[in-house]
Amino acid sequence: ESTRNKLIQLLADSSEKYISGQLLSDELQISRSAIWKHMKELEKDGYQIEGKSNKGYRIISYPDKLSENTIRWGLETNWIGKSIIHKESTTSTQHIAHDEARNGAAHGTIIIADEQTNGKGRMNRSWFSTKGKGMWLSIILRPKISPLQAPQLTLLTATVLADVLHSYCNVQPLIKWPNDILLHDKKIVGILTEMQAEQDIINYIVIGIGLNVNQSKDDLPEEISHRATSLLIETEKEHSIKALIQEILTTFEKSYDQYIKNGFPEIKQKWESYGFKIGEEITIKTLKDHFRAIFLGIEEDGALRIKRMDGSIEKLYSAEIDWFEK
Ligand code: BTX
Image (cartoon, rainbow, N blue to C red; front, side):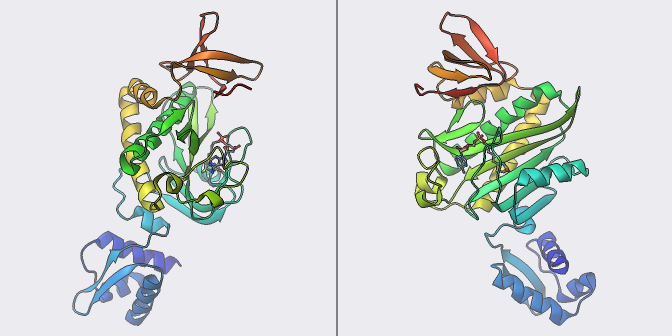
């Protein structure tokens, strides 16, 4: 397994150029016929490899299957996804991310799984993560911002997903405060932000993103099928999860760097351009209250801005919103 990964890494590093069998055999300390056998194995896994007797080997194309190498290949970022952990199956990428972050994982480390058996939503809810049909991703961040600003990163993440869905998949997403992305009123993305902080410093933040990609209607569990959707359902075609991950990471890095440089105003503006039900009457649920109000948008710090029926304006930091009469 590790020889194989080193081999792929060497081929990936030399990119378009051929790398000789002799060089590979020296680097990996295995025979040239062992190299040849590895190449055959890679081809079985969907790698397209060209071998020329006087030049050596090169990768022509990667399989669509997710792995550390296939995600890294073609990912042009400066700091995000420089370290990638991929699991075929796991309880939750959030669990792995917390373990890794506690053990010092770098800013920008990502954890990705084909399947989660215990995917987490907010407030102990669960997140259905069908095998191979969606993007189940966690990003470890170590931002030098105050813990009070952390919710801004959730809003930022929502704008990144909305941007990618809009420009890359040609759909019209809306963001439901604070962090659900909807297509035709149905949830396609969920975002879960978890933080480890002390007073004024953030140790780390883990942002979990679940994006439904290639589920058919039948793949969605009954209990969510009326409120959930996927890219396949919306666009009637399959999408490459690997390409989506790369697009999302690239867009995330740009947006994050801008946010660190320029602060929240640009994110706020973008968020509001996608904001669902802005200017309309919604139902608001807080821990101790349940009422109707007008949704005005978000505040400079990312809080929810509402107008009560008596005309008073309020800022809310944690609330659930809905738009049905209950
Ligand atoms: P949330 O609490 O806003 O949403 C959870 C609710 O959404 C569930 O109670 C259910 O009604 C509905 N739901 C569950 N699964 C799906 C789905 N696949 N599509 C649409 N609706 C669904 C949102 O929490 C945060 C979700 C984050 C998921 C990512 S995946 C990678 C990372 N690892 C992990 O365990 N969680 C995050």
